[in-house]
Image (cartoon, rainbow over all chains, first blue to last red; front, top):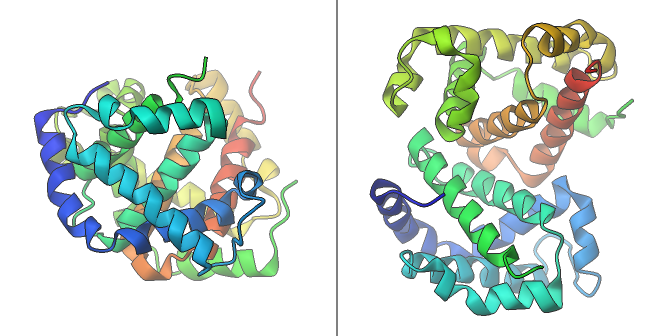
Length: 142
Length: 147
């Protein structure tokens, strides 16, 4: 599965808007993840996960920044995320099922922030992009 | 049986009261067919599904979407009884329509995303969580009679 030219363009143009609210979006995606899928909190026993916490804001910002890196190298996402891929495989070892859950929450967050832009085609592009990112982040697991 | 708290029921019912079932139903089914094109396999007789605009504008998609979401509305009215409410539909989806239950999960998530585009800031993490619970429970109820 790879992005078409049209899909890349959709992502690049929406990223312009998203990046201006990157931190808020990252934070909210995590809040949604923990609210809808409480089992995901097991990966953050060392965090204060109350909505609005500094931990959530910092980590949310980190997640979206990483997506930004992937988008900036959208023709070589593998290369852009190589280090993160190793981190997830050897250190974090987050079960692969959770990437789908976070991807879904990211989609919901973007959809609620940019309803007019989040057409069915945009939805497809972002769903595909996040699937590709998830694949890359889990590809060294075994 | 899934237990919904009073807050979760309120979050669901409150939002549902303002959903235009005809409009949203069409959007939901349309998006399913656009975003996950392999789901088109169940709709060979729907005519033109060749592009996003063809799908979103397709009258059969809109009509069937309305039907599906109306049925979902039944779930909202009977959140404590989902298995019973969907028992017959579950058998139908298994024996007559041969639908992989994974599709119920996909559809549930699309419902949430469409609600997010319509209700925006109001679709808070807590509201989403209540709806997430409902769509999961409906998906499980629809899969319950599979054999």
